[in-house]
Figure (cartoon, rainbow, N blue to C red):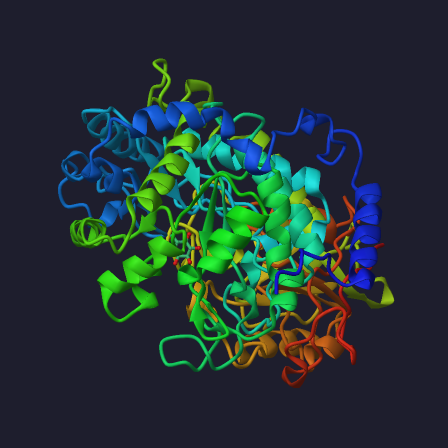
Amino acid sequence: MNARLSSPPRAALMLSVALAGIAAASCTPGSQIGSTAQNAGPARAGGAGAFAPYDAQARRLLAQMTLAEKIGQMTQADHEFIKDPADVQRYFLGSVLSGGSSDPASGNNPRDWEGMYTNYQRIAVGTRLKIPLLYGVDAVHGHNNVLGAVVFPHNIGLGATRNPQLVQRIGQITADEVRATGPNWAFAPCICVPRDERWGRTYEGFSEDPQLVSTLGEAAVRGLQGRSLNDPLTVLASSKHFAGDGATSMGTGGPDKRFLDQGDARMDEATLRRIHIFPYKAAVDAGVGSIMPSYNSWNGVKVSGIRYLLTDVLKGELGFGGFLISDYRAVDQIDPDYKTAIEKSINAGMDMVMVPDRYPEFIRLLTELVNENRVPMSRIDDAVVRILRVKIAMGLMDPSWTPQPDAAARSRFGSAEHRAVARQAVRESMVLLKNDRGALPIRSGLRRIHVAGRSADNLGFQTGGWTVDWQGKSGEVMPGGTTVLAAIRKAAGSGTQVTFAQNGTGAAGADLGVVVIGEPPYAEGQGDRADLSLDPADAASVAAMKAAGIPVVVVLISGRPMILGPVLEQADALVAAWLPGTEGDGVADVLFGAYKPTGKLSYSWPASMAQIPINVGDADYRPLFPFGFGLTY
Ligand code: GLC
């Protein structure tokens, strides 16, 4: 069945559009992003037209290429597995990536990255046809691999802002900081539509609502790619992971098929289109240059090998004119025989393969497949033309092209200007779920505020996964960041004593207790959980604070809604701050009333594990807090 893409349920559409209106209206005017002044400018041509202007030049270049040079362009290796950088020339590699933990050998500062990137590019342009590399990184909430970068709220928080202009500005800044260190490709935005909070990638999604994902995903693409891809301060974006990554059933994914990640999305085509393919139309129309097919299966078949989805729907029906980049070793999962897996994926429409380690073997096998007529040369040529069109659009083939980062961009890396935008995003992402007895905003002139909780003074918990390391890590992960505790100390002022005990002891006699709890960092399947109850240590710190008989404010730093249990009753005020990133001051801005909370839930909040999955539009919909919920002062 070839049902055209239809919009999501009308109720959800109306609700999220209405909320977007509310949020946009409630966006603080003036210098704050959201007044669109910062983001005016013509939208880039999208869809099939996006890369057509570069087709002739790409085909002229293709005509000069050997099979080895063509297959090299289709091959992406990870820096951590390239033992000899000369392999870029030896195999005519078209692209290199740095995975979540794949940093320069010399260190992880901006200059280390610049040195690594320019070295690879110098080698790449030493080849016969002088075709520069696409260098990809997972800049999914800022240039999060690199020390000193501004780390923005993860997408779940941006979904709560309902502010596409802000999301576009964040994309712009992310591109600026990435280009300041060299790389020219971000594997972002993730436009998954997570439907089950037990999935470890829920926080990478803007929302459970496809319309909201579509709106913010488009804004992110426009921010990352700018008005022109050949602007040295923009990057190639990669909308991911196509399609149904957020739709898998519990017990079909993970290494032992007990969880969700990379599992099986079981649904009819109409549902897959309505919810999970829907956001890709706006991405394609916004001119996204690459799309990353997903690990998951659709009704038992690996999507990265389904020609109907990759070629007929995405490239045909939606008119996607860029190229498809596989996920990390995703091709390997298509068939137990690697050569057959490559054959199935390339013939399905995959254009570039994130190998990322055994690239000599990949190249040998794909060469054999062409020589054995199992992969037609026409498919190779189509893939290479798509890659070359994007590279030409990015200015990589211009005589003036240089790998040297823009000097001005270097000076803006981690700048106060960038941090101010991240701080606004933190403010607008916060959702006030409960506020009894006027616990918030925190009044001035208090004698003592007692702070507790594992997440109060831990930048690594605040930034979450995909920060410096793939899985993130605890502690002082990112120079230049501000923890929630440090922010509270600043906002409270000199007249108020701020004390801290992680377990909540020592609260007696304080005027107010603030307990900051949530989840340690994780990424992908390592974040899959069958039980989303709060950690016992967190529950205990809230109980200890409550036992002191003082008003208690609970701040939840998590990648998803969690099962609150007695904490809901014990808290006088409850705020969802999601994974706010480095700018903890944004949390204090709202707690102390410098700004009102305007965030609206972009996910339904379950009352119990028994309710999960629960999504807006469900027939029997009785969440603890509904999609779109959020109080203010
Ligand atoms: C990961 C993720 C994908 C990421 C890629 C490169 O496994 O699925 O989102 O872009 O590999 O790190």
